[in-house]
Amino acid sequence: EEIAKLQGDLVQKKDEIDRTDVLLEKLRREIVNLTDQCTLYQETLAAKDEVVVAMSNELFQLKKQDRPRAAGGPVPSSCPAAAQDLFSEDAASPMAARGVAMSTTIGELKGAVEQLKDTVGAYQLQNDFLNTEIVELDHLR
Image (cartoon, rainbow, N blue to C red; front, side, top):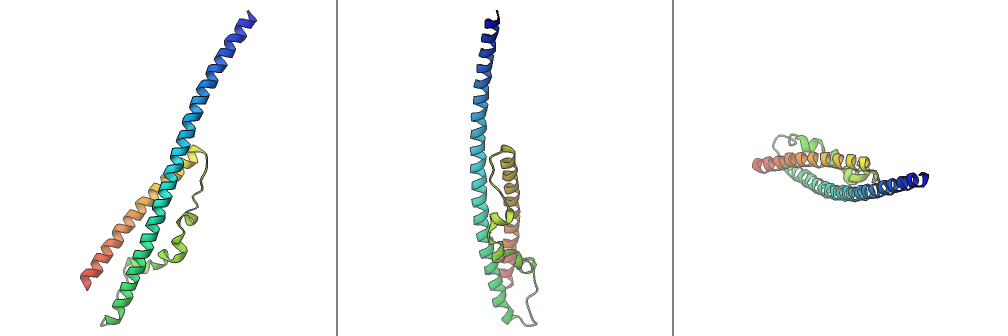
């Protein structure tokens, strides 16, 4: 009777181990997926940082070229010119500035992915604004 009970417990424990193994494999796949997403967002942000810096430098150069031609003094500063220090070379290392750390826990990876999504959205808004400013400068010429 005790042997039958122990054998039943053994079967239950084996089933529990099988379910745990399946869950573990699922979580490992999710970690890999989230890590891949994190890497993709980091690469996207790095590329956007490079484009924003290049566009800001180009805008700065255009404004610098327009200053000597201005009749009454310097060109009025607009938001991108006032924010030039935001796009300095110190800001060119996006991941170091954001402190995004790769981790192996799902919660931390999901949090990092959400943070990166928010940052991508912010860059898109900033890009739209800078594009509008560049178009307005072209119309002023």
